[in-house]
Length: 264
Image (cartoon, rainbow, N blue to C red):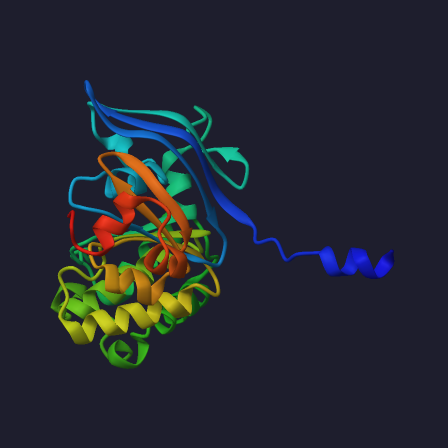
């Protein structure tokens, strides 16, 4: 009997974010409809689908970025490790320290490279002194594979870096608050192929520490970097599963049509 119990045990990955019946409305426009999804820890989850299908809108639900849009209303339930992130007692600023975000276009602050990374830890009081802050800045720049390129010019403007370096700086800035989840909204769409490859390699490395969710218009990128893929179409989550299964054996004909290029 003991042997049987050992054989049937499975390694269950931690669910980091859970969405149930998530809905998004822009005024009367029903943009996201009844989305149920589990985002796993230490996993890269890709959101794919045609332009305007709702993938970025749903991504912004996960750290309440949609709160900044007056006409936007979110319904249903989204939890981070069991805590309802839309509970009135949850401070969106503190939530966004836990759920970092990297945007489509690199957007470093008009500050030094050092201050870009140090900004989050400073405002959230995460370090006690300059030595600790220096350590956090160096650690995050190393994790973003940028340290060796900028260590001799930390006080130069972040805006003076190349596009790919700026995006890696934004990733370093996003992880400086020690988030639990990292959201990326088409982080490579403004980058050249070499910079894209560097960011993709970085995403794979970050997976060992964070739950990463990436919106991408590139199916090849989703196939390269993710373990789980969600296909959105017209505001619906059509299919969600292992990336290899979604791309080689999709269950829904709409997913197959998108992957083979018949819709999009």
